[in-house]
Image (cartoon, rainbow, N blue to C red; front, side):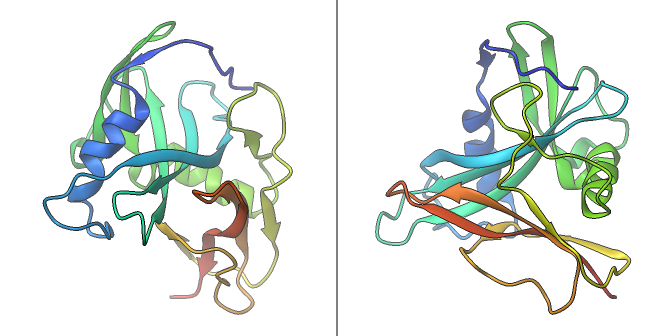
Amino acid sequence: MAVVHRTTMTPGKLELVTSWLPSQPWYEGQPGRAPELAKAGGFRLDDPEGEVGIEFMVVTDTADAAAPVTYHVPLTYRGAPLHGAEPALVGTSEHGVLGRRWIYDGTQDPVLLAQLRALLRGEAVPQDQSESDKPDPTVVVVPGEDGPDLSVTRVLHPGAPAAPATTHVTATWHTPDGEPAHGVFAALRMS
């Protein structure tokens, strides 16, 4: 079981994601305008080896108040660099308990991908984002036809359906006005 530490990270997660996000091809913000991110939800999965932190963070960009955009940003936290994953590095941060952490786009980290597939097979338990050893009941795996391709939703839309009959995972986040929203985070699709 992963332990959630009550400590600081310098720079913080939102700082790192704010500078990284505009360079992503799925970023919907205006070029040249920095995102204004607020944490909106998410969940965690445990690494069976206990070495890699796995978080499915949800952030909302309110830079355009009339049209906020909610992003799903899977992250992994490692105690050493992941060989060959330099393009996926979001940044490094000093953790108040664990020391230097290398933070990666989790869609490029084999540990996160393996645990996400385990979740979709019903072999992993989603955990609360902020509490140690507390399952997150808002994360739901919807069984269906399993395909070989794992698809991660990057821009979240409340109630957006997965492809018909695919196995997928849904979870809850909060909109800028505080209302709960629920949508598809990932799915197994046919090629």
